[in-house]
Amino acid sequence: MPRFFLENITAGNIRITGEDAHHIGRSLRIRTGEELTVCAEGRDYHCRITAITSDEVILEEISSELCAAEPTVNITLYQAMPKADKLSSIIQKSVELGAVKIVPVLTRRCVARPDKKDFAKKLPRLQKIAESAAKQSGRGIIPDVMPIITWQEALSEMKKAECAMLFYEEGGVRFNEVPFQGCRDIAVFIGSEGGLDPEEAEEAKNAGIHNVWLGNRILRCETAPIAVISVLMHLTGNM
Figure 1 (cartoon, rainbow, N blue to C red):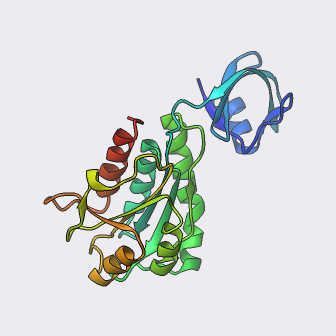
Figure 2 (spheres, rainbow, N blue to C red):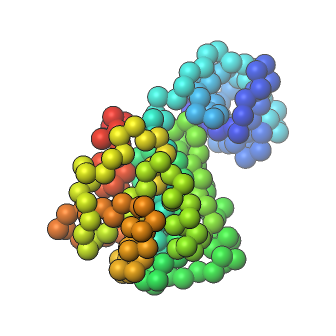
């Protein structure tokens, strides 16, 4: 059944407008009386189309339920800025696996170094990638892709999470030694191609962020987020 997202739902007045409305009527050729799913705030609304115009699709609610695809933990991925178009793939896979937010970060060893204005121009396309991945994987929300931030800004944000982990190839505690059981808000940091500067890793450790080791194999910056989020989903009972 097709899925569409709304920011919120008003009982008795469910309407899809804009690009999605055009997609329903013209591309999908869905007609009055057919059913679709609307997602808002982590809840699935199973609806029947009562009217279609050139500008909007009007729906009646049949039933609703919490989205079964939404995990019980909120994972925010802080990703050091990678080269080329790797960030697009990282966003897609992280959303499919259950991340709720992706935050690009500039660290000392990042080769790609866009300024904030240049990166802001890319955000709409990256957010579209997140939206497409959310629809494909049956998510109940569209995870946010945030503007690029500095290392110090990332540290400040991560410290607010119930559990924060920095995955460091030079060592740290093992994954199963991190006390994240019972935590709902989890922040994870993954480095770029050049890894993380030792001083940055030490700064994170001093800030109370766990330095975590993923083993003797060095994972690519686009592979590590997939591995980390997958393990977290398994250990928290979401996979």
